[in-house]
Length: 95
Ligand SMILES: [Zn+2]
Image (cartoon, helix red, strand yellow):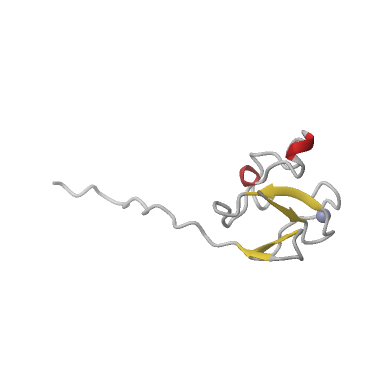
């Protein structure tokens, strides 16, 4: 788990699994900032990127295509998850 900070106020607000984190970042990718201390996740699972707010500064915590970690402000680039193939629209091909 990697601790990440708010882009605005630079306070630790969550941990992420850097193997699975992807754009757009959503609440279900963000876990307790201090899991060993039993602190619950600060950002609820259901929150999407648009509605996400930092619990400390009340701004949107991630405004760029990367997130910052507490480890020397390392940047983790948020890549879009390769989306499943879109379903074809229109009339079904009659096979
Ligand atoms: Zn903040």
